[in-house]
Amino acid sequence: MPVPEIVVLLDEHHAEIGTMPKREVHGTDTPLHLAFSCYVRNSDGEILLTRRALTKQSWPGVWTNSFCGHPGPGEDLSAAVHRRAADELGAELTDITPVLPSFRYRAMDPSGIIENEVCPVFTAQLSGGLEPHADEVCEWTWIAPAALTAAVAVAPFAFSPWLREQLPQLLAEDALEWDGSA
Image (cartoon, rainbow, N blue to C red; front, side, top):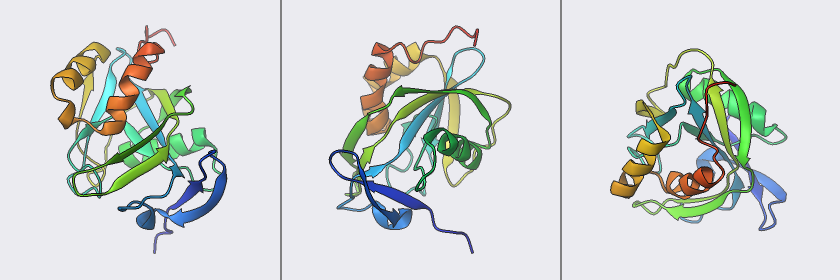
């Protein structure tokens, strides 16, 4: 039997105050908790965009950043990024870089499920192939940062709320531009 994933709960000052099984965290009264987002680039500087599996509890079928996750209690964020990249995308990463270390958002999906996360944002470089798991990702594509910006502007409803909030901040930090020399 698999061990349940445990999520770190936070207070309004982002201090750890406890834990809760992931399956119990996301609902109509989701407590503030720790998560992360990652934008993966390929050797051409494109960003891996994924479409959430239709079976996901919240925001099924929307396009979003490469992957997200929750670090476990005491788990280093970089280690959590590596773990989730392997679990969700079957991918190995290099050059994991924190770019929005204090990003926080709260959003409600159409079914009433609330996301309420302190969600540091990372970029990373793909090292090898991809084998996304169908229970996490139903489609994926590589996209240039400018094309992603244009798509979000034209059809914001097709994208996750965290991507829509993160994208302008990432662009302001030049975090999605990459010259391929890394």
